[in-house]
Image 1: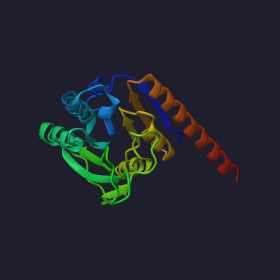
Image 2: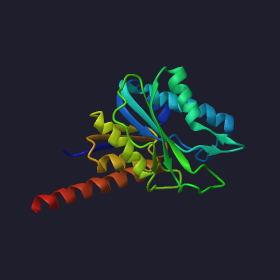
Image 3: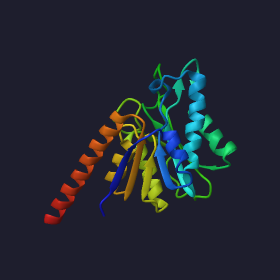
Length: 223
């Protein structure tokens, strides 16, 4: 079956608000403060509003998965805390899992940002699924603040165990989630970003992935 994808240029918070309760699965990473012009207080308010809108856009038995790296700024901005507070305290959801994706090897340090990302999964009534490792390497990234492909594919593999074949990334950036979903044969993939340049790059990358899948499937048939 051919995988279909859409890339939409829109304000992600407002777009999620307009699709309340619609999606079976979201895999995303909210923008880092360095990608905005916000100060710390403004950014924390944004984290809360953005994560709340994402969480409310999934179906009751759907899953919202965030891949987030904390921010060092006069201390550490713990993104997992603010997202979890919105999910668990404000929206009365439950955490399915909290995993760690290593950015650098164990016992390595970084002066500018933590060397790991959180992988946070929430649902209202979805099942927890099978047990998987809690610590993994994030894999390759398309750009500095992008999610690693191994981390994204681990999230998508979990969704497959829940018989989910549609995935949405409302902060798609350069398209890691959509690319991985297309590679894994998800039927429907939707990405949203407010930046037209990011949308253009994602469309181009997704188009190349679909072309490659068609070529490899054709070669396999000829054999």
